[in-house]
Image (cartoon, rainbow, N blue to C red; front, side, top):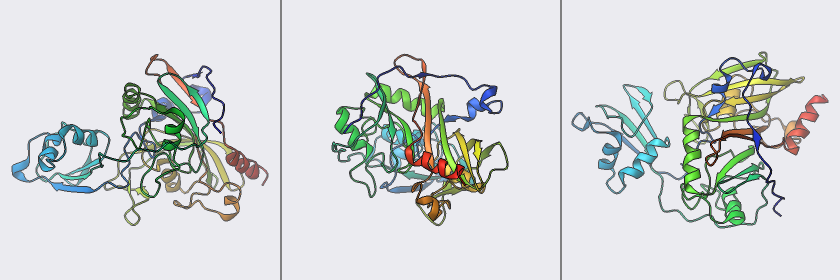
Length: 355
């Protein structure tokens, strides 16, 4: 059954100060853009189009060039793909940020993941939800681990989108009928706080904040190994893994700039409990960044953190979206919401403290 809704006032945001243990400028480092939790459409089933700009094609805006190449699709629709990060641009052998108004140059290499427009809707399903806050424009939920955010490749039902359709009916339509209200995402096995838009105006306002990196996110994670540093900033570009398409990797050649600040909360005999503040929001960002410095997350089967003994205690990657802070579109006030540490995560911490 649906848990009782809490309609109390949200936590008022406070600025990071010296007591937070963050370095100067930590406020900027914790602003999140997308990630597995970026405000993007799903690319799981998207066909890929590749173009190299010829000498006689140079000059027009990028969205105009794409519209000429793909006449069955509107310039507005293609511009949205560029804005939402579905197009990769390599110029003179180096990746460059793509914008709809950027003028194409000879030799530009474009890779566009063109998403289908007409998708079946997310059918309402009676799936329990824990609601942290609800008002006229938005809902804040605590997503449990094991729940996929929306239907996609391999997941046709039993998702958060299906649950939202059941509990709230009409939500924002910006992301289409398969993703009602979905502004950003978390990985299936990542738990924690998410914001959902009830109407399109609220959705666009929240998406703008994600794109501009004014949304502040705080995650909690348990990683393998004992971190030597009390805090550090991991700055490493991320892109698709060369060998496995479902994985991300540090890619110095074509990776997108990515930054994660982490701070040690507790050290154990062979593990560390950390607080992570991602500046960017790339797919699997925290998981890949922590693995890249030798500290994969506990029970992360994809990036090297799986240990059978600990998987019995916490069977999914030990990553929890703890806090979300943004400007409320209706009041223009900064608000923050926290999702309590879930039971399996607390069980893992207790187990490690007892070692």
